[in-house]
Length: 81
Image 1: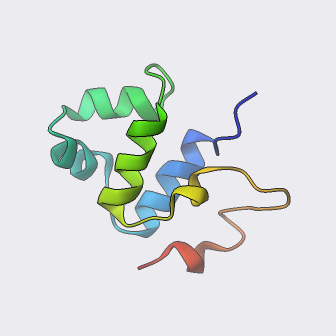
Image 2 (image 1 turned 60 degrees about the vertical axis):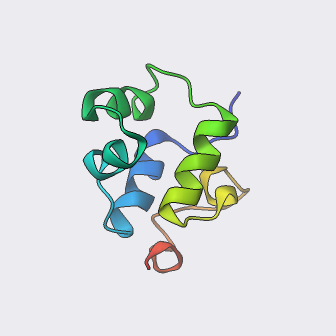
């Protein structure tokens, strides 16, 4: 079982930072459809990919992983810029 947050939670974190999948795709020089495939689970996110997303978006890498009792939607303020 993966310790990654759900793709919906990851997208929610990006949305709180004002980052769309289209924006992220541009930064990676990928098509939006390819980026969508990553976030829909059709393409597996590697550690390198997650590290790059965290670095590009200035989001702490640890925020992409589940913590016991942690809920992105219950504490959205910490993810805003």
